[in-house]
Amino acid sequence: MADYQAPLRDMRFVLNEVFDAPALWASMPRLAENVDPETADAILEEAGKISAGVLAPISREGDEQGCQWKDGEVTSPEGFKEAYQTIVEGGWNGLGGSPEFGGMGMPKTLVAQFEEMMQGANMAFGLAPMLTAGAALALNAHGSQELKEKYLPNLYSGVWSGSMDLTEPHAGTDLGIIRTKAEPNGDDSCSVTGTKIFITWGEHDMAENIIHFVLAKLPDAPKGPKGISLFLVPKFLVNEDGSLGERNSFSCGSIEKKMGIKGSATCVMNFDGAKGWLVGEPNKGLAAMFTMMNYERLGVGIQGVGAAEASLQSAREYAMERLQSRAPTGPQEKEKVADPILVHPDVRRMLLTMKSYVEGGRAFSTYVASWLDIAKFCDEEELRKKGDGMVALLTPVAKAFLTDRGLESCIIGQQVFGGHGFIREWGQEQLVRDCRITQIYEGANGIQALDLMGRKVVGSQGKLFELFADDVASFIEENRDEESLKPFLEPLAAALERLSDVTEHVLGQAGDDANAAGAASVDYLDLFGLTALAYMWARMVKAAAPRAEGDTSGFYTGKLKTARFYYQRLLPKTVSLAEAVRSGSESMMALTADEF
Image 1 (cartoon, helix red, strand yellow):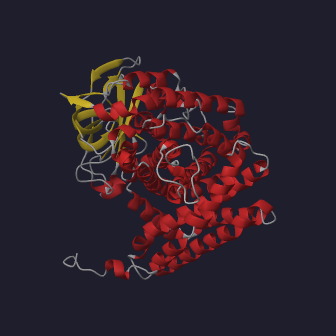
Image 2 (tube, rainbow, N blue to C red):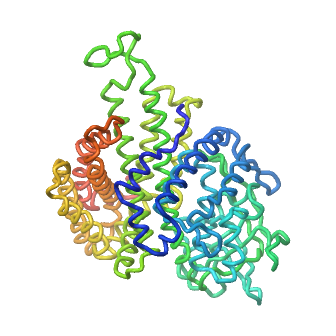
Image 3 (cartoon, one colour):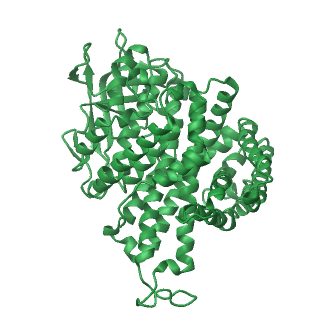
């Protein structure tokens, strides 16, 4: 198994050459005061060292040991506490946090690169900083000044960690039916009672306090999702002077035995009149959660890219070293008993498929992150509104498409190893098991597809889709005379037209068929994702082509050849997906329950 190395060269290419992120940051004063190219590069370099040198080496041991539960206490795997301390000492928990409360105020476009390194190196560990950052984001956006001053500095520093408590045994996707209650105490606090399940890092020994953000219902709250409120519930109560007081009235009842991410604790949390404080307005808890969700769901998509990158690194190294048979064109390494399996077309198909999805996915996650930065930091109202719309539209695509392709890439990487990929010591089977959860948590991918098709496309009558379509169309028009792009612009335009036609088709069906959006959703999201990655590859070709001539490293020439593979071998899948969407819901809904 290859030792994980952060893909810094490609990250710099995406940030600096494809998207010119420094110019984007400089255009927004609130970002420009915090980040410049030198600072960004130093952050990337140091993040790469930590990911490769600290986090990756404890991933396998963490998977084998897992977390241990005893009498309500959870012990993290060997090395995790020390790694967490490294994260704390470097200020990495607060990388994207508000400078007002001790965060570094870095843009999401940069933070996304760190997240990918961390998740690719050790996904189970990476969930702890990821959840803390999400919790802090929700608090900073919706909490009172008092709560922010009291909790954010220690969340950003990592001295305290954060956890999100949404799911209940009977309520997953349908949060409107949660039963956890919050009774006002007569002061500014409430007593929170109920059970939450699947709570990642809900209990552990790495931080001195764990701040839970819990969805619950106040007395007389409206039924359904409009009656949900969000509460901050600390493991240890915090005194007026900031010191820790008595333990709050909740505990970890157990931890789950899981298929993957075994190094993280997935907890059952029992709240028994625990003291909590309202975050945001009463009955507006989902709004506060969705502030965090856009970032977290992109973060999960980035997990898919990170796992796929790790799989690609191992598979590529193995393919260059493993000797089996001779090349179809004759022996390539005559002095050896056989040629490396890299010579075989099918192995190249697998590696190029992985490379296409990993590098295209990295570009796409950075593209979505750039719109998050615009939505948050831009001073131009119209552009900020466009950013909000693009984030709403693209977030479910980033979460679902990147994790679907992430698992696919991990499985392909396992396949490159053949029988050795099924064996523990090579590491590929752990990547498959770890990556599998990314399609399920933070909103299962089928729900993401329904969100895209039903709420974002049909719900806006295509208005949100037009934002993306216009962006792609503008790129095509602006680069019409670019010689290096001519082989790519025509198929990109055709894919965009196909996606646009299918969008109009479903919009037309939806008025007469209540099942139309749901039946189309998953195929539509894949069609959208493949088209989006084609757009990313076209942008990468534009950046790479001028530097390809005389390129002795193979980096830029490799980009151009991979783009050609993507367009010729993967983008054509959009044709069959479009036909599937156009077929409507009839065949899907025709069977009775007995006929299943």
